[in-house]
Length: 158
Image 1 (cartoon, rainbow, N blue to C red):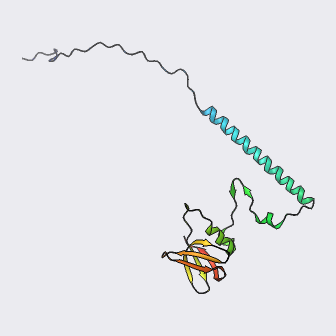
Image 2 (image 1 turned 90 degrees about the vertical axis):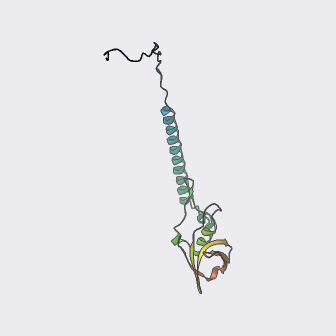
Image 3 (image 1 turned 90 degrees about the horizontal axis):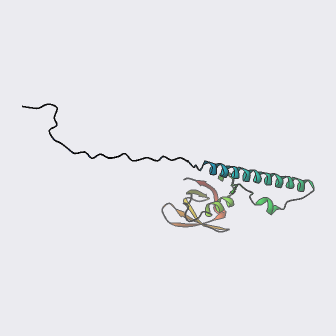
């Protein structure tokens, strides 16, 4: 009793018109701006290099004319590229090591070192450094005061 070809259920479909699509005609990119920024940066870097070369030439001329630098000028590190040159820790003197280890900000974790004295070894970090006395916070949490004269070797352990 089946009738073939005829739908069993009639669903009324509305006749919709397709929307008219408008495509993008113009494309703007920021690559041009980036290229200009890169060019500006390279010209600024070239100008800085030229200034450095001029300063070095002036220094050479002053040296040739008999200009003598004072000891204070030689002791101060030279700034290049916004960063200060620092000696390797092994090459530093005992006083320089203590100044370096005591100069960290509060937000930066301290280096843990081994302080070897004539009588004992301490492991910890530098809390306070004065000309003749160093305060060391040991790994166990206690604070030890050691005279600088007694310290023989400082090694970074972690």
